[in-house]
Image (tube, rainbow, N blue to C red):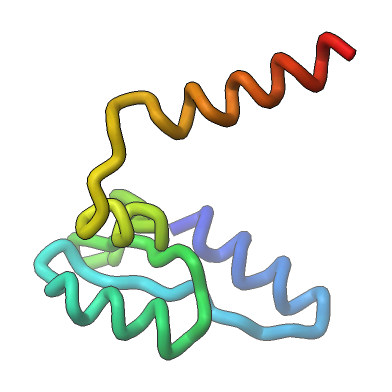
Length: 89
């Protein structure tokens, strides 16, 4: 809850009052996708309990990975190699 309050107050200080998007543990994937698309955000916080405690985060990448197969370590190997290459120059 402290994390969510900090996010809300930080955006308020910048002049933009943007409440973090949340969903519950039992939310359907379709509902999460709709929220991400409708609000043009790339992450949604998963909350649970009576006080809506943050228990996780679902990112757009997480949703996409439900529909696209990615070989193990593909992302890490591809971008890891690029970073190593950049550092060696």
